[in-house]
Amino acid sequence: MELRLDVPGRVQHLAGQHYVVRLTAEDGYTAQRSYSVASPPGDPLVELFVERLDDGEVSTFLADVVEPGDRLEVRGPIGGWFVWDGERPALLVGGGTGVVPLVAMLRTARELGRTDLLRIAVSTRTLAELPYADELLDSGALVVTTREPRGVRPAGRLTPADLVPLWEPGRTAYVCGSTGFAEAASQLLLELGTPAADVRVERFGASG
Amino acid sequence: MAGPTRGFLGRRRERDPRLPPGQYDTGRDWPVLTAEPTPRISPETWSITVDGRVEHPTTWTWDEAHRLPRAEYRGDIHCVTTWSKFDTWFAGVSVDTLLEAARPTADAHFVVATSKTGYTTNLPIEDVTGGKAWIVWEYDGGPLPVEHGGPVRLLVPHLYFWKSAKWVTRLTLLQRDQPGFWEQNGYHDRGDPWREQRYQGD
Image (cartoon, rainbow over all chains, first blue to last red; front, side):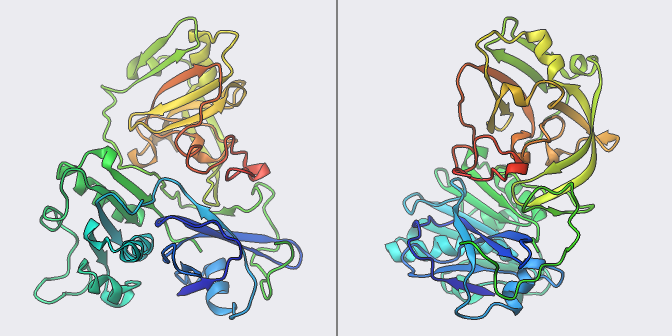
């Protein structure tokens, strides 16, 4: 679910950063979670992508209770490492909802007219579960599905052969996804010869 | 913005007193968060060095470190991404033991821990002395898993867990504070979970 926020006087974010949303109950009890920003700096609103988890204390509230016009306490932008500067060639490798910060990078590249700097490879269980699937496909991203066939390709994970044509020396790789995905994808890149220093990893478990 | 969020009731009315503000209990899970690919380090090639402002810069191999007095930590850990994990059990050696051998000089006030990957984190010396910090290679009675920093990580459980550098290989004593990786990237210099020192400015 996309949560679009008007954040008055905000500090401009960089593609790849995140915001913290903090909820406060009447008795002062608070719960907070981090969400990646999907919007580019030029968007007048800040767009966060929230994956609704059935047992998620914060995500169910954001998905089921929040209405347009509500006020939320947010903090951001946060993170100075998993960010793309809009200038360097990059390979973006995302798994599932891990594509969200990569979508911000794609949109930033579009704003700058520099989509030529990016190569994108995405893995998802099914196409229907992939956030921003149409936008990623339109950008020419390689999308593989692990639980259903896609075209002539059987269900399966990203392979070295998928990444070989996408990476070249000097290209920074941004890997984002679940722990298992990030681990597998970053090891794949190292096996292809990507220097460890050129691989930036953002891992997350589901955060309720 | 002060004040309650419209419609938010919150789930947990009885809050576990072991939870610092803004944290939740991750239960049996132990989430993994690192900014770099996981390195493969064999115990045979691992070593830990204490250098910088010390009288006797010292390096211990895996075997040498294991011959030092064993020390354990049983208690809770807290990650800045808001999970806390209760009743963990780590074993290794106390940082006090390493510093007793290396002997920090009188002007040593800070420590930078460096990982095999180049990751760094900084700490005041008071936060790694007096039984508050360990170099650990055992978790829950078994080898520390590589994704959690194995074979050996730093453990400073009273601070947010990014201070507990994974794959640690060096502790450098310094006269002046020198911000580490996350501390240069928007996170708090000290990281006390009970004061919610998550980000710069907290």
